[in-house]
Length: 292
Ligand code: SIN
Image 1 (cartoon, protein in one colour):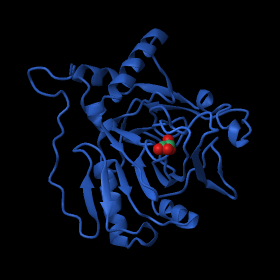
Image 2 (cartoon, protein in one colour):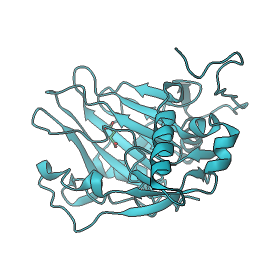
Image 3 (cartoon, helix red, strand yellow):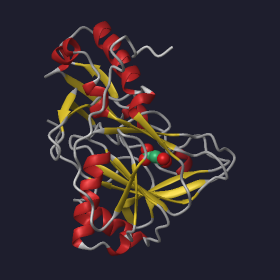
Image 4 (cartoon, helix red, strand yellow):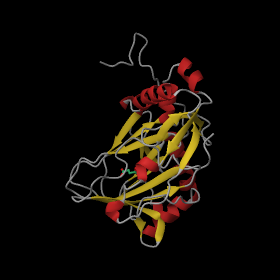
């Protein structure tokens, strides 16, 4: 049963604007709401106009994908740097000598894989990442997809009463439970503490000006200013609401593909359905601003 449908059609309606054509890249949408494949571009040699159009494609599609790329670690880092200062992950393993080049790796001996639950990257940081650039170089024969969900759509689909209730509310995001002990199989030692931050439940995107729901099952622990049981119940509702497949796209990787997502308005979830096979790559993460 589709619980969102009444006699007035779907509760969430996407109303696309009139987009200007792209001149230096090709953009093929995966869904009307989120995701697009970009072609006609070499990320190691972007012209300034291509860079502007890639930036615009990210703003319009929330997550964009580039197949058949050949990037050295340096070129991967440089691509990220064109969008801002790089973020250093507070816990995850990185390539030797390159703290901003995070390892994304799972094989037959892994106790877990990165990003298995819905989340926005490191939302427990005071300045959480604006975006993440994941370059997958080795894929399992099947599976290992990543799901992405639009938090603009999640916010827009809430009732006006719920929006009024949540507007101005602050939530606590905590990395402790997520990170402590998590990377022991990579030989990573735990830190004395992990980041914890307070962010608005609804944040305004600094580029598009649109409002996005900014709570996620991975890191958000508590709504401030309401009793604990109310906070638990409302968060449970919001997590479920945000995970509605209507707001999602699902990406099937091929080797040497890059995904670039905007953590300010999208959540993602990696599928670890490929054990005992190997999936491997690197992530470069771009520092963001304090959510407002
Ligand atoms: C992540 O959360 O960065 C991992 C995503 C993935 O491996 O697809």
